[in-house]
Image (cartoon, rainbow, N blue to C red; front, side):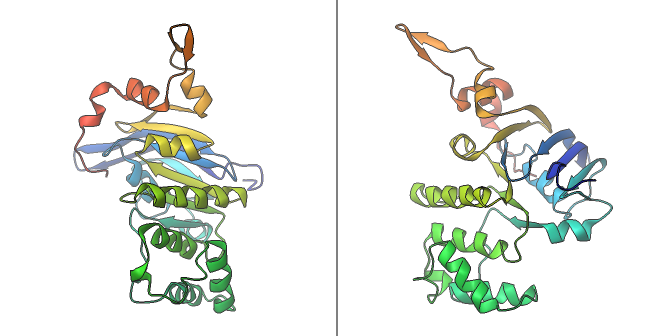
Length: 262
């Protein structure tokens, strides 16, 4: 496969079950290189399961997936060298300083000049002044930015962000959003899972809605809004919001799903 022209991620017919529960029922989508692709869905929709398959942590029951031109099942080692995965909670060592966390990861990756790498990332993520402080003293937004910085050591072309703003306050969320936008501006491909409609609206070049194990709609924000007619109130045209599109597509009862995302 030509890795220059091919999609950064291609998913075709992916299925996954856990005993009698079918979580993914044939998922298909492509992610263009250097773009931000949001996988939007309620808790239990299967977002995390799909990310774990794409990052080689789980095997699918059926279907195929390629990441950076490598088959997830056939070349898992090449896939792992091409990606970084940031989970729902920051995986930083709170006993170490911010700089020490970065240096540790650079050494584990056997990279030259780990100190210089750490200093460059601290500057890039506006953490230089906090670099000498223990990560345990950081705010939620700072910890998440450090977590993302750690995941970028080695310059992976593709990064998976699994609900990166879970539990963050509004200001911290905005900080993380800016970080994600900067990643894409530098050419990194970002696959973002989220259940926050405003997050997908703010960040994504394309949005796929995952509901009950399948992609029920996939498009740009403008394309998704066109699925609902504009409402006219007192002769003022009102465009549908992403929230209205999402709730119409998945059904009004989707918000009552208390299941844990598999």
